[in-house]
Length: 55
Image (tube, rainbow, N blue to C red):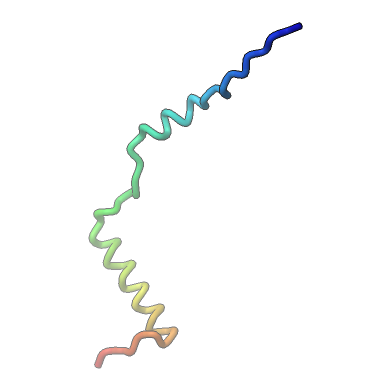
């Protein structure tokens, strides 16, 4: 009779490297980009009627 020992599945070596890496948003601190995005959102809200234009 053959004895088999169940071993846990080996861990993916790429998963360890990915977890240790410091990843984040590229260019998150760009003030011009933030301003453009806010203006774009405001324009879409004006178009949809969710926001009234200031006079």
